[in-house]
Image (cartoon, rainbow, N blue to C red; front, side):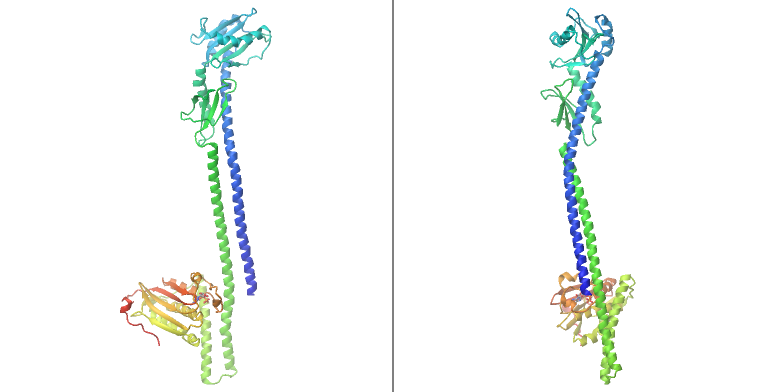
Length: 553
Ligand code: ADP
């Protein structure tokens, strides 16, 4: 039966250990998985942030060109169906109404059949055509030449679209062809781009309009405009550094670049920070989870140990009950059969029956006491009592069995007057009997036990000293736990329930005292109960001034 329970227990323990290892492996796997997915996420989020920034930059660049060309288109598209040199007044009115600061000046050129070109310059300063306007002939001529050619050859270009000529970066010209009914070029309207306006007003206004539409409060950016020689022309933030990325402007000012800088962390840094944060969180959660599982497994182990202890307890109690009962039955049978008839032997047998039943009573009392303690029903009746009286009571109870086992118990009272303590006499007697009983049980060949009453500060002390098998340090804390029995084979040779010291500790605690153990394997043990004394009758003189302690006969 014991073997079976042992096997069952070890297989349960194996299952628990296996579960613990599985949980650790699972958690490590989860952590590794989390790590790799976070590394991937770090890369993806960094790339995503870079792409978002690039797309935003491209959008702003496209909007800049679109808006600029749209304004130019409005200015340069004449409202009449077939504009000609006769419509000069109407054209002038149109330029006046549609004039926009993006143009340094506006012009209209008509190509005549005689391959001549009539050019009218609209002067923004005068708000009218100005025949005396000093226009850069060398700039306009090469721009107009291809259109003259188209006109002379009657070739039809696409209608309406603004053409940008940036061959001369200092003089960027935007043109819209004038077409007749049959879509042949009869002239062009054009404007000279105002570079200062583009750089100082137009781009900044577009950037300011679009910048708030980007990202979040954490991801702030700066937009810049740079010339082909990387000269900074404009920046949305005065403390700008090098651009992270840049794109050329499409369609107009195509040699200029719009650039972007992150104000806070770079995409790499912020992805790295997110990685560290997420990984630490994951690690923390897994540590917590591991801790919880560890606690659960520990609880299960403890529960298993307790159930093992309980089953040991039942088998030990059965044995403890059976031994005195069979002795009593044998002695009773001898008497009934008349095998013992001498009065002296009858008295001796009666004494043995009495001793065995006393042992039974003590065992049952211990079990009942333990059950009361466990269910919280244990009650104490405290009264002022001399500690000496309690020790004498306990000695009376253990006298007969210890004498039969050839034990010599010495009692030393080192106090002048025996200390008066508030004690539950029966409970404290039981505690001392349990301690003396253990001293007898675990003494083996050395058959001398000493009971010592003394004082220690505000405490009266009772020590039970034996020279028996002793208790290893690792067991000393645990022997007060319920059902606990030290693991040595010397202990298992002696029968016991593992309840004696649990009860002693409970009783001592109820008296607001404490119990200590001082023991060495092979050298014996000293259990000392400390009880608060409260009437000043304890001898407070130094040890050397005290009288020689009385020893029992
Ligand atoms: P038990 O019924 O086993 O004696 P106890 O609660 O009284 O139960 O004691 C718990 C354990 O403490 C014992 O099993 C024994 O290992 C150890 N023990 C108690 N008293 C002594 C002692 N005087 N000497 C050696 N070991 C002791």
